[in-house]
Amino acid sequence: CSVLCGLGVKNRSVTCLDEYHDVMPDSECPEPKPKAVRKCARAPCAKWVAGSWSQCSVTCGKGQMFRPVLCVGDGQIMEDGVCRVRRSNKPPSVKRCTVGECPRFKWYKDEWGECSQTCGGGERFRDILCQDRDNNEFIEESYCSNRRKPHASMGCNKDPCHLQRARWNSGQWSECSKHVTLGYKSGRLYVRLSARKCSATCGLGTQIRQVECQDRYGSRTSEDSCRVPAIKQYNRDCTLRPQSSCKDLQHLGNISEDGEYRLLIKGQFINIFCHQMSSTNPQEFLTLPQDIENFSEIYSKRLLAPLQCPYKGRRNDSCACTNAGHQEAGLTTFSKVRLNITTLEIITTDSTFARVRNGVFVPFATAGDCYSAEDCPQGNFRINLRDTGFTISSEAEWTTQGYAVSKTIDTSESNQLIRGHCGGYCGVCLPSRLKGRVLPLDVL
Image (cartoon, rainbow, N blue to C red):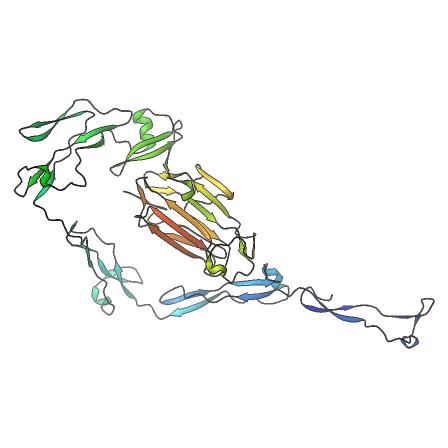
């Protein structure tokens, strides 16, 4: 066939021969001359297929719009070079856009402060300043007067404070001691402290305090007059020699075995797994409740028609797909994650206690795919920090990398449970570095 794709022709030689196979003039052959040319068809030629334009990348001023442009032939994605063979120019995938002119001056909103009351309704405040976009300096508010000023205060902790005739009065915590004795003196609960110090192998001791029921005049009354409190606590764990890292355990406790230990972190004792305790650089790990609830996945399949989102976006492994998807596809589960105990962040790229179920190692809290150029993510990740004493900080954010990327991040149970759905063509989402921390933690 005269062409590599599409419609072409085939040629052949047709000659009049005598009985001795000598060439004769065409007029010597009495039958109609057979055709020397006929049409032929190859697979349809690959062509450029362009998707729809995205929204402008900015809300004001000059930005860019994007769209997927793919070389498609015979229902499959082809290399761009296949379309370029036909000397066909690739349509643009980026173009400029303008969304009005950005005002030079804008309101800068600082973070909210703490609530002024714990119940009954309080207020929290933040600074609202006028900022010059050209140099990011703060200026007089009059420059921003033509734009509505954001609220500088808001209500908080509106739940009513429960009124009662008597209340619990908790004294200050005592000094830390390994052994304590409780007794009564003049009708009041008192504390007698032992002279023994806390054991150096764990650093743990006990603190006690006086807790009694008092009436509105401050006089002690029957405990039946007070509601059962949430924290009627007479004693609690303490440490005379705070051990807040596995290295502290090495030096202060002379410990060299790997295992779970209670470390003092942000004023709370939390179970931390200390790894490589016999080395000069032990590492801290957080043991997770279930590895099947802590996983990262970059989905391996890619649609043959990537400008669609079939099955209403739901996963279907029997899709019209190729397995030649994302080159870093894989599924990884985690039984422990490594911590930076100083900055309180998860080191997402550590694979010490990770299990690669298929493909290659995928970092913690990361997902993606090369499935579709539409909003159709198939990659998933899960985070479950139940019963660990930690929660993912509300400051944590996920950034995207790749083309036509979409992501959905769902949180629940005070950020102890997080589910992510990410993908693109090809695209991933991963924790972004915010204020120097990648995946920051808070102590419950």
